[in-house]
Amino acid sequence: MITGDELFERLKDVKLGGSTCLFTLEKCHSLAPLVNRIEQLKREKNAVVLAHSYVGPEIIATVSDFSGDSYELSKWARTTSANTIVFVAVKFMAETAKLLNPDKTVLIPSRLNGCSLADSITGEDVSRLRRQFPEHTFVCYINTTVDVKAQCDVCVTSSNVYRIVDALPNDKIYFLPDRLMGQNLANYLKARGSTKTVDMWDGTCYVHEEYDPDLIRYLRLEHPGLKVASHPECHPSVVQESDFVGSTSQMLQYVAQTQAPEYFLLTECGLTSRLQLEFPNKKFVGSCTTCKYMKSNSLSDIVRVLEQPEDLDIVTLNSDDLAGAQACIDRMFDMVK
Ligand code: SF4
Image (cartoon, rainbow, N blue to C red; front, side, top):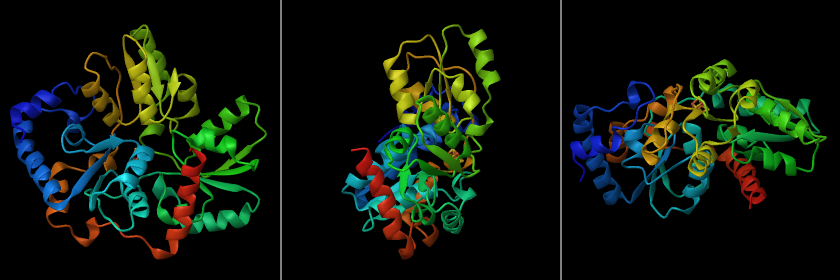
């Protein structure tokens, strides 16, 4: 059991972020009963809660059994013995968990299903592209729906995209759906003298594309010694101005392993919130952007899907896509072994 006072003590240091990331004592008193109810339901239903680092800190700091980026969550989902997985993130990530755990019930609490990046492309688009680019190896970012993965050769995440594309035998790569990550990938390959060429789809993440390099330059003037870490979904001009580029889990490691007076993280607010809780002696500055899809998951939604899930809350997959999507993900796991 957690009390409202204890919850406030845990969350009071979250400073950056919008209204969803600020916690008063009154708010914590209203949230504590939901936290206790979820813990009870988890025990009764042999359920685990997996939460992406971008969701609200009131979830990550309490009921989440594991928090991480999409790659870490997929890996963790493969090993759990629980009957039910509550996947607190966005729907395409929950679909990946279902793909890896076809016999388990996977629940998605958010009712605002979507993602500007994943929704930019469909499996039919990829079929058409494959006819247009028959000699290319199709590489999809994990932020895609199952029907898209089913049409691609290998899946990648922000933590392994450079490594996997580098290791592919084909020089002709089609990368989808993130144009900015594709441009960062092409720049990386060029800098290494690689002969690979990258054609790409024109999708973007509306959260990461908002950042611009002027903000970094301004903050460096105001905060001498500042260390800047950005996500590869950011524009290449932002990446070039950064001290470190990587997935959210790699950014976490970077903060843990470096000593700097202050840090500026260019990714969704949730990561900064999480690191403020995990590293209370480190200082984070600047602003951050919020993903409405990730933040639409709430403690009361988790209670709702555990108590009485409706069809909409239960992840199901089209059987036509299963084999292809599974092969696409398996190839990623094989290549990063
Ligand atoms: S942060 Fe961007 S890529 Fe992630 S779910 Fe939100 S819109 Fe999609």
